[in-house]
Amino acid sequence: MKVPSIKELTDSMVEVGLITADQLNKALEKKKESGGELGKILISEGFITEDVFVAFLGKKSDISYVSLADYGEIDKKVISKVPESIARRKNLIPITLKDNILTVAISDPMDIFAIDDIKAITGMKIEIVLAVKDDIKNAIEKNYESDEDFFGEDEGTGGEEEGW
Image (cartoon, rainbow, N blue to C red; front, side, top):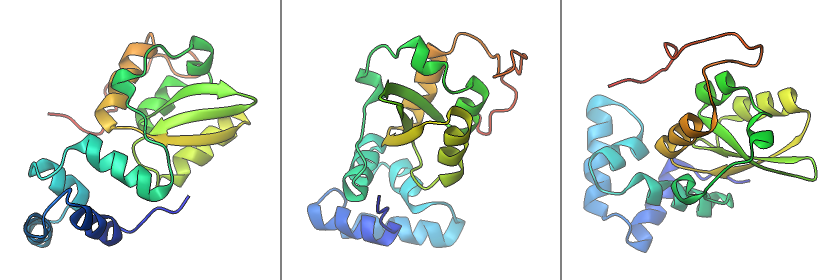
């Protein structure tokens, strides 16, 4: 897996016409003014959609992209491999299990700690695929039946990092 720098990624986006050089320059200026991540700025300014951004990142990183909105049912045996508390905290969800390889959808391929945590918890080889953050959150809501963590203790939903 070779995750490109944000400069390589955005330069490629301009090169193939996903965003214009002017849009990139406006986003870079906004980043200078207010900070934040360039990818999030491009998305929030409406220059590119999150699903196109994530799919393009996947293509440039040699990581498959999956649309969880169109994915369908995830086997409960697969879901049970990752505690709900970890799935919520790390914004990831297991989607398939075959030959002791657990495929996990994640929105941030740079989160090595999340991948290492899942390896340690499951003892399995982990393969990652990219998915849109909100699609992962929706899949977690759909596929985990409660707010119980790995040990069966109720955690509630107060630990979410972002809110409206």
